Length: 472
Ligand code: ADP
Ligand code: MG
Image (cartoon, rainbow, N blue to C red; front, side, top):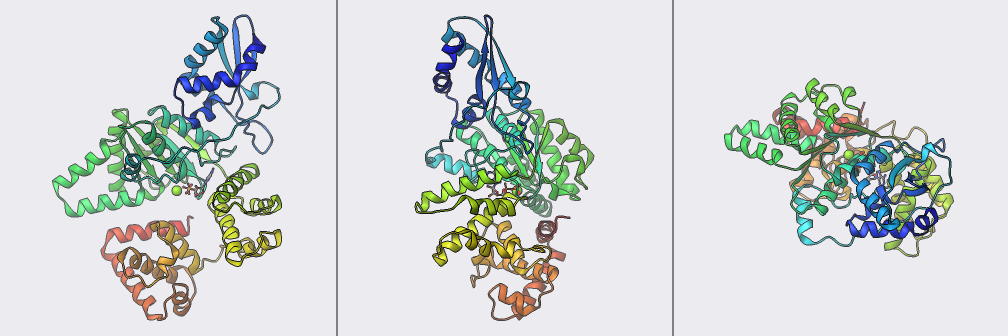
């Protein structure tokens, strides 16, 4: 029976996937890692091996995944095996860590086809971006527990409630959070999903208090309390904002009572965030807390290889040697956003200058970022980067003549922050922002300084940007 099962195993799993309509990513995460370990007279034992190893070469802890597979897929798998072998057998699923056998092979992810219009509009209404999906998230030892907890929640809302994901800047928290939302929208046509982060949420609360109209309160509460899945990003920015925390607490409570799913991200674990009220922390701790660590070398290489693959779709002639990827992976080790940024810088400089991507070219292109002391001193350019990222606009729009408020406000904020954070004079700041007249900078500074005093929403934006520029 063992041979029969092993020989047909891959096909059997494919059939199972088809029969139960399991999505590609769920299949890859939960089912594909299952291999046949042994078959005795009364028991089939499968081993869960996702091949993810940590720095010490030890397989990462799969206990959460195994317990989830047991809960969600056990009956499907057992039925399938019993039918195939025509015999009722016990089924056991064990962890790779408990046994000593050779690794098995893995498969590639298949990206889903283009999304239809209706889904697109639901994604937009939910404040999500389909750029962030489970398919484009590279899983490694640093994030696999967070990834599988996220996928478990996306597949079966309420599995862990709330799910709390924490980790440093640029490690993929927003990516995972958004992936959960996209997955739920894709697979549940009726699900109501809402993504928000601390800043717009706080501004909404400030605005409603200012307007002080009963109907506004009602529609605000309705908006957040009638969803099936609420995704709240960067909760750490709510520190010290008691009124907003109060609202979040009430919303979370009500959703929780109604068994609606809540997922939260933060840069620290609940207990370690200062300035968050105790009962909110208790709520967070009621569910499952998972972390994302810095990516290890293998994960960094896998992320870069994924980027090469994507870049090749646009530019099939792209040639990048392993030593180049190696150099990038070794020099950008603590933050996926910076790793991405370094890669993009190399490929775009190579396009602009029409130079082949050699190791020398790469070292040269990245020298400014790699050199010691980098980042210790904040430059106007760093500030423009952070502000552009924060407002989700292009740097070139900030540094343009465009008068539209969507650009002029972030531009003035840059002027303010450059004066606050850098030692540069007005002329240098004006130059960085592509302004001929440095008086524009001092004017912009004054405008924002005044608004901070008068407008709590502007103060909130500046508070958050201060933390983004200097997280400590
Ligand atoms: P955070 O919210 O933790 O600060 P993000 O989710 O914004 O970080 O991630 C920063 C960037 O790095 C994003 O472009 C994201 O897509 C990318 N990224 C992070 N982790 C991964 C990963 N494991 N695989 C692929 N891309 C990743
Ligand atoms: Mg984020």
